[in-house]
Amino acid sequence: MKIIKHCYIIGFIFLLNLSTVLHARQLYQKGDFSISLPDGWVEIPSDVIDAYEKEIARLAPNAPAQHCDYGFQLGSADNWFEYPYILVQIKNIGRIPESQIEKLEGYSVQESLDKHKSDLSTVLSNVQAGKMYYDKTSRIIWLRIEANVVDVGPISGLSGMILTEKGFIQVSGCSLKSDYSTYEPVFRATVMSVTPSSELVYKPKWSDSLPPAVSSIDWSKVAGKAIAGAIIAGLVALLSGLRRKKKE
Image 1 (cartoon, rainbow, N blue to C red):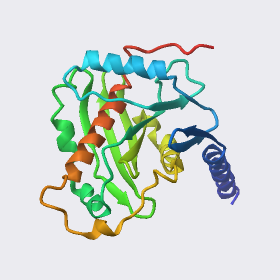
Image 2 (cartoon, rainbow, N blue to C red; image 1 turned 90 degrees about the vertical axis):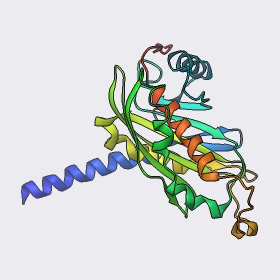
Image 3 (cartoon, rainbow, N blue to C red; image 1 turned 180 degrees about the horizontal axis):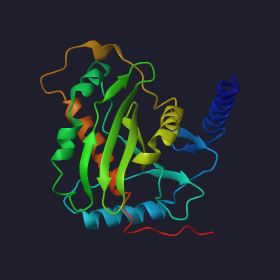
Image 4 (tube, rainbow, N blue to C red; image 1 turned 90 degrees about the horizontal axis):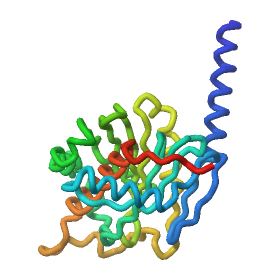
């Protein structure tokens, strides 16, 4: 009985600590949306993100060019872009009709990633994307990702695509695979904390139920490629080639 009671106490302390991590959060207002992260996380400076994007272009010149709008990581890290971290990309590709959203679940992100396998071979290998899942309640499309990064090893990530009237906001969290179970709840809570402005929040329209026109956009391909590109940007950013010391 004492052993069982001791286990209950340990479990309670663990849940209490996890609750503290998820609920003690700080809000960031970014243009047309806000996002909150746990206390202890800091924003990655824009010049650091720009430097990484240039390094990505140098190391993988044939891979799709990507732009990360914002980034966040643990303040306790010695260097920028150390695990775990979260990247935010704003994709204004146009409003995706609600009738087309569920079709995205059938799109093979893996196929888009495989097309760039050779382009990324110097920095990434064994990139595996899970199946996209659409949460109708939150209007978020979720995706799991795993890969091996040169000089780093196995990593895991979670990506959430928040629909907007202009396209979507993609939030991707990555960590070492061995640490993923610890940070997955943080990544998920951060994605769900994103709140678009009243003008940007996704609003269903009656016209969404109409059959698509013959010349209409294939949103599964457009969004799928955008998601694949965002994943590539997130994975490649894990490189240590341009690791920069944080200023005290």
